[in-house]
Length: 608
Image 1: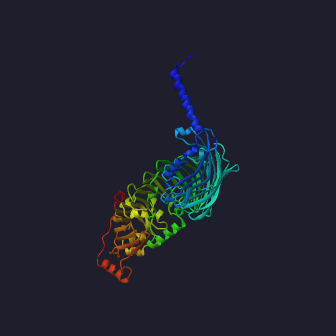
Image 2: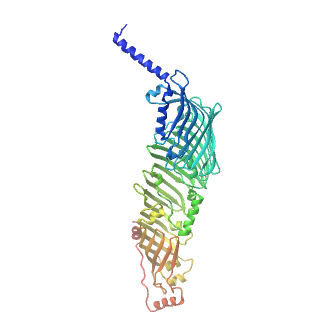
Image 3: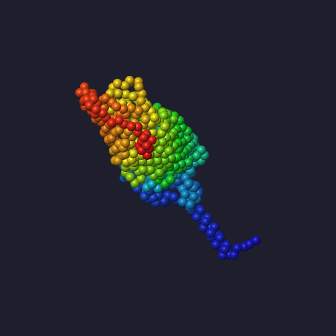
């Protein structure tokens, strides 16, 4: 048997004795002497006055002591209002001593008897329970025993305009938090219930928010009692719009028509996973959706998909929003370019990807469906690849909205129309032909309308190989005689049509406009102002054969794209005007005749 030398025996014995002494001190430590220090630390943390009546320990010797704190008061920080943040009559809690040596506070049991907590989030996002933003992401997951009696929690949130006042109880009959409040000044009842909190296993719960404008039912399981950092929840929600629902979930949603949704939500801090999301928004039907939402520092990342069976863009606005849009249209007149907002200011902290599929677009003549991917990266949104399915043909391309280091977003549009026909956009018109188009514009603005109204680039339309009424073809060529005498049912060939707008600062200058038919040729010049969609165009026609009555003055088109104003030169419809044209024809003043245009070159020019 090995015997240690006497000095080593003294050293080892002294070390063991010191360790035992330290353990004995920890097991019997008089925690009450730390009252003033604890008060000072809490006052520093919350930036307000703190007072503690007494701190007593129950067991004289224990490595899991129970302490009793009486008359704990934490005043509201000055920026959060008046009164107290916390006022508790008595708090009993049990914790493990040894983890304190590693800097960890391991709370095992908590009992609160009487008090009030007033939680405040101000308009700038400051939280009085986490004023210095050092609060960790812990929850009550470590608590294996919770007892609460006569505790009121009052919560007021200026960011989401919501408030709740609930009475909390936890005893042998289970956990209950019930009360009332308001969301957007509309009353709601709130409740959270679960079994008695004893032990650290899975904890099932039910929650409900119910009012005239919103009802949310949640049934789920937390990994441990009140451990919201790990849980799975099945949700059913009804709200007058998504923005009202967003007052609870804070996902940055917007106003819509009434919604009914169901989903399964999983939270594994810091990641949220939304599955099996479906329901309705107004008349629109969301078949399925899913998303993974995570946090990295101060940024939120989203990866998900949405599949609509039916979608009406009108459903993505409230009744008030619709009324404002109608009022604007009445004031400025109907517009082709939508006033959809593209400012990304509220999404500055969001990155991610969202795939969208719409099987059927409602209330949009000629449009059938939509497929695209929205990708946002630090205030730069890319909508690509974009495919809009039409009754005939499709629109493809991409849209980029860039707001990096910009107050006003810069939008880039690069779109093509392929495999379509004129009849798709001019239903009921007697003209039809295969139609192609190209749009390449770059402009800045808070809405699509503003950006295009200040844009630079080009817009081109081309059609070839179609038909139109022969009477119309003659009139387009300023051949008044044949325009008046041709049979209504007679048809002519539309050999080709080409229009190109070269756009500078929202003003599109025509270069060229050419309509070539089997009877005549029409050329146009002028401008289209995209900011208000006003037209200033002059059309000059040339017949392809001799005519008795030729209009030698241009037809002018004004007004707006949606409501053009066609002005025939004065005197043309009068007997005197017709006689003057006849006189010129009899006198040999015949007009030049047009030849056939090079349609291939025209198409390349307007779409190139």
